[in-house]
Figure (cartoon, rainbow, N blue to C red):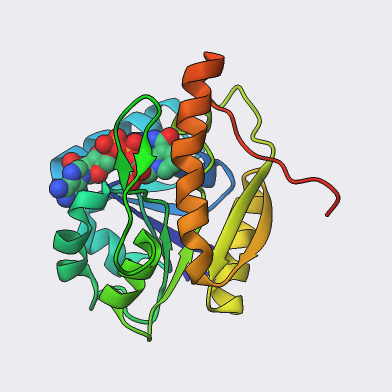
Length: 220
Ligand SMILES: NC(=O)c1ccc[n+]([C@@H]2O[C@H](COP(=O)([O-])OP(=O)(O)OC[C@H]3O[C@@H](n4cnc5c(N)ncnc54)[C@H](OP(=O)(O)O)[C@@H]3O)[C@@H](O)[C@H]2O)c1
């Protein structure tokens, strides 16, 4: 951490979900390291955000530099790219908190979710990074559309799953700072349920002609 400001790296931060989280977490006061496979693309995306939001502390870097500089590493990349990207990143993220938002979507109307041999995408990532790194699964039910629309306040719940209570606390604090109610969903092995919710919500958005349906649990 630099001073007492937590540095949040977003791997694949030029995409819809990555840019949305960068905006919201940047507005909440975190230092954002926006990553891309292309340094140029990252700088362009970070500058675009900075121009519209001069109060956000954001820097565009390649994914490796972004991961190296961050305290918490958020993955907003397509499922298909995970093996390739984690091969280069697993040493760099050792000992850090890695937040997985990704879903193995099978496109369709409605989309469905691919079965992952490791149990879920988050468990697959945990196997790839090893036990010294804590993977936390979160932010699957928050639409990129809503994240990027700063005129709309975030509300509702986000389920957070992971095997380290300390790592989950860190991620729950991030979620709370951007206006969500984080709920501890249990160990990482429940992540397949969290990941399935994304395809369920995309299908509901199609049926209800909406763009940002989320979830809220009652009687907690
Ligand atoms: N969109 C949503 O509302 C939403 C909601 C919940 C969860 N998610 C999950 O979040 C993840 C990202 O979704 P998205 O909608 O933001 O996707 P996206 O707009 O396609 O962006 C993903 C980013 O990943 C990077 N990327 C693409 N192919 C790659 C590869 N082969 N290797 C490494 N990086 C690659 C790209 O960045 P560079 O080209 O700059 O490297 C791209 O900007 C997905 O797993 C999705 O399931 C999305």
